[in-house]
Length: 149
Image (cartoon, rainbow, N blue to C red; front, side, top):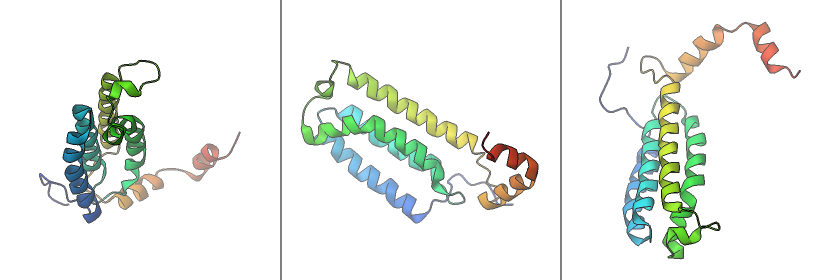
């Protein structure tokens, strides 16, 4: 059994991604016409990486979270190079500032839910947990679930 630590080890690529997001996020938010929303977008990205990219697990949980993050953050990040206010990018005169902040909060809660749902077990490696879980399934049950109706 491994001892619980306050900081969980991260793969080198995850640490590099965190540093890159932090070093790009601050200057990018200062260049934008919507600095608060862009800063929140980068902070959301940092939280996703910290929550879902750990040493003992494959980074598969990053895919749904990063997909949703890209859907929400694309328009606010486009204010960096377009240099127009965020609400002017709306085709329907919607309040994109509030919508983006609400969407980013939803993505953070998605990442938290993915982390909680994955079980975050530090006692056993991911591969061992999968093997133990797979051994509890009977072949007939797997066949019923996997065959088309």
